[in-house]
Length: 139
Image 1 (spheres, helix red, strand yellow):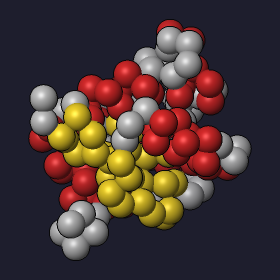
Image 2: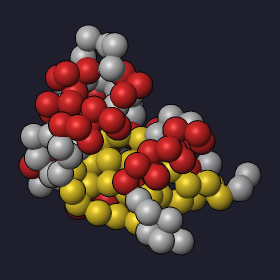
Image 3: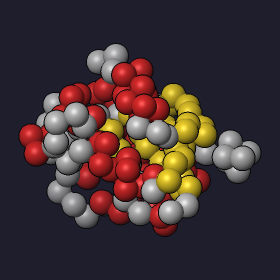
Image 4: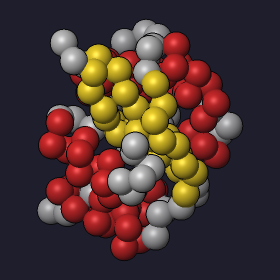
């Protein structure tokens, strides 16, 4: 298996609760190398663009509003099988269904405020990385 790059966000709920450091520590302990990292705030337009794939879903406007309510931490992460390993570490989208020891089981409040995002495939990872990071950031 080869080294792979993925994208992740520590969402506003976790940043506001002071959990970003603990989440980063869990990610590093799981063998990920942080290749780029930045705290930022999304505008409505930026959040709508990032989540455009969900535009027709009933939760879209609530998701956009949530993602704009405070700072987020965006990351480029690398390790073998990074996409699958990060999704395992994050746990199920609904924290009630997440396995013990996962990020969402420890820190998420509910399915809407689930503290982290991670890319779901190689093409998505590439698109999401480019949405937040320049080529120079990702060298």
